[in-house]
Image (tube, rainbow, N blue to C red; front, side, top):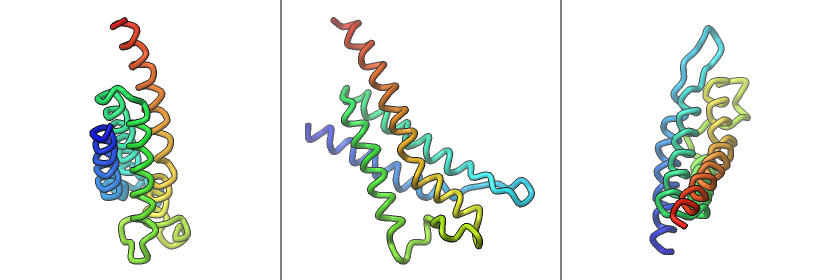
Amino acid sequence: MLVSVLAALAAGALAAVVGSILHATMSYAGDTPIPWGAVLALLLTGALSYWTAMRRGKLWVGALTGLSTYVMVAFISADAHNQMIVSAQYFEVLPGPALAGTIWVYGIIVPVVVAIALASRHLRVRTRSTA
């Protein structure tokens, strides 16, 4: 169990750090920001949650990965001297970075839920085929 917890925490830390760096990457179509880095950060979070659940064979490990990602991102964004994640309150001044930060911080739950649902499905199939 300790190995599973450590794997989840390590994967969550990786997703939080890399995702927080990656999420601010964006393009613009005229004045409209396209925060594709935030989408990639969310995909990374989902992939790591799925991977840890499948690797350890337990859904709670994938859920813990997602939870630890969210908690670490919350700590990063709550820092008064944070320069990585622009909060939604700055949307009028910095619409692109604020949109990317909002998608990253509040969107983490979506890929984690999808990853756990997919892992649940695949783990059930794996269990049936070995029984």
